[in-house]
Image 1 (cartoon, rainbow, N blue to C red):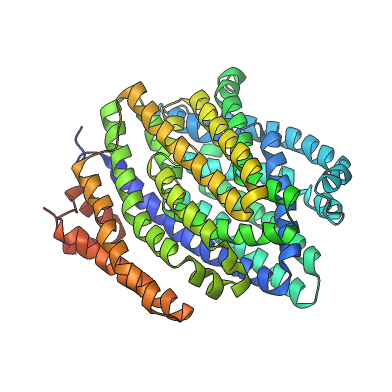
Image 2 (image 1 turned 120 degrees about the horizontal axis):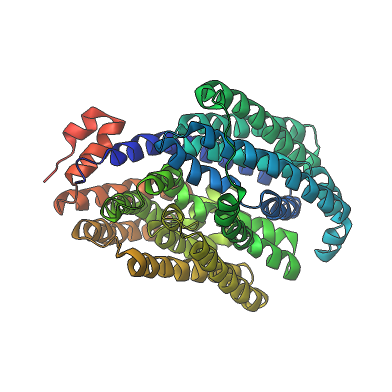
Length: 503
């Protein structure tokens, strides 16, 4: 099958464009929530909230045993084989199991809240953990709903639940409570209420839109394949969540909650590069899983995803790297400009990592190599933890950023080596080289903007215009657009497909 005949490219573009719009909306609303919090509470209160939610997200991984990840692996295969009863069985079995396990974990956390708060030497953290412990079973069901949408490739409904309802409700409730002076309690209640309303709406929409699947007679499937696939990914998720939050834990242990809050803002801005990967990854994994025996087709789909992720993410990384201090000062407050080095380090690391398979190893997951994903994530966490423990006492928040960046580069390289060794798959083509090469003149053009302009606001406005303009011009000059790119753009707009100059 040629690239031109692959309907998966159209599916990737169509569903990816839907999730991209959702991610942009979610990103804007998430940014608005953080701006709200950083302006109404001190960095220490914000840092305390970050620490508490990090503990919740870490415990939640133990609560669901990785089982929600089995849904978007097995359900697409059962649907492809027209075994709808088994597809329904997977969803029901996973839901019932995670409800029990997550409730037990939530109770355990509530009992040990005082011990955890004493470890971080933050007394107020005990109350925060007690109140937030109810979200552990809620997050388990939330993840079941998300992966259920992924499995049937109806990501527009995920957008409704995750990217619209949850952040809008959370922002509204949080803003109202902060305005009347509720501080940390306002942050917590906004988080809980936003999640509860999102789950309610998501469950109603999924029941309505997937009624033909849910009305099918259920056929329970053997638990062993589900567990065999999920347990390595559960361990992967434990390590991966630790990876995402170990910086906060280490900073909270060695430094103050103020440093945690400042680092969190820098980390969030740098990790904004994941928006394109997060838009394509949910549909990419099922597309790989359903055709995992056709290695030629898998490589074609992987190369398409890599080019699009790199092509859109690279200019964003250049903008953030060159204008980090200006964006932090303007979007948040000048005191957060202290995290500019964090943004620069993480922007480069996330760009490399998401381009070559992503931090969650979605290609390896789709091919069934769940144990290898676990090993990679263990390496990711180990490198990050060791380096952060060594460097934070010396370099502060920059030490945590160096640890995370090094680990991301390391695992991105491991993923490339593994997929080539296992299946002979690699992303390196002449078309990919043109995408990367266009970043050189764009970077050169952006340097004078940050060097000669003194106003942070002017830099924030001018820098993306210059860099993106030069980047697109470089793509046109090098004749970088392919027929496949035109097809992908055609899913957004037929006019764009006609306009794009294709060789």
